[in-house]
Length: 303
Image (cartoon, rainbow, N blue to C red; front, side):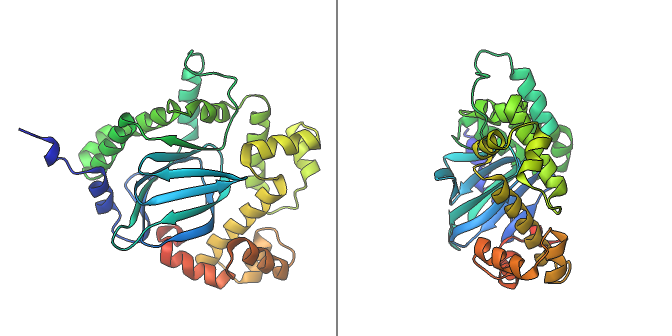
């Protein structure tokens, strides 16, 4: 008897968990399912550390002149909070369906440390913030079991934590896991830049300068600039501006204040300058972007 035909496909399991356009929450806060029926081009995004698995449709990321595919044959892994630009293919007949998975950074670092001394991982590998890797049967298998568990509460309660741990492991031992682990292990210059990213995230509303950030990181301004660009694909100023604009974008979509108030909240002294930077970055006015987000991103726009 063929039992395989009785098992729901990965795509069918995901489709049931994502009935609405935009991001659909699951019983695990770290796992969301995206459904999109729209072709998107040159969309600015800010991804948290984690991975994206496209089960139907096609996405591409663009950063610093490089193209990163994430489609049915490739997944995308992100080691640090990262702004970049994205395009995707989808339609009402064949909506894009993708699993978004946020890293537990403590767990990821623990696994990376455990793997640290193994010969299969070269500690000299350069840390990378964005990685596209080919899907493997073991990765598909753990995703299938995770989505199945999300449909069954008892299974999720008992097996869920182990499945999330296995998913972290599969990503870190994947084809380019060494470059990802180099960022998570945070040695040398990478550690200083990652700590600086945390500082920027905590103090992005303030008037941070590159010399101040370099001093805090214990680096010269030129070496800080080079290390920052190498890891994130952005200059420190580009990164700070993108973070401010993405935070403002969410606040506007959630109707958390007037435009002038939100501009001030994210560190802009001039509402006019904020509006110019916003239009330049997102190619839409704040009100147009808020409407677009509510139509396309779903639960992300909920406060």
